[in-house]
Amino acid sequence: MLRNPIDTFIQQIRTEWEETLRKSRDAQKKIENKPTILDDALTAEDWGVLSEYLEILTPLKEATARLEGRAIQGNCFNSY
Image (cartoon, rainbow, N blue to C red; front, top):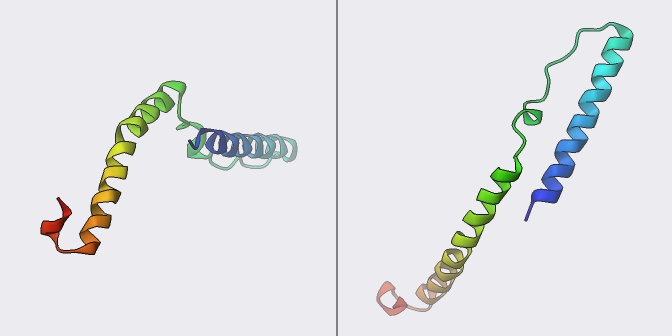
């Protein structure tokens, strides 16, 4: 799933934000707005729910793809 790339991306944003904060404090500059994604990161529970959805929806996606393939070969009445 996409958990590792998303977690890596969020960590990169967090690191950049912390660097921005440090530089702003050192130069006594106004601090820009914190990236929203840092407050909206997915929790372990969120990832669990997404995994359950994926488990439920994957067979439906595969069945839909099979039915769409049959429909291309003929009219809609031949797809059953």
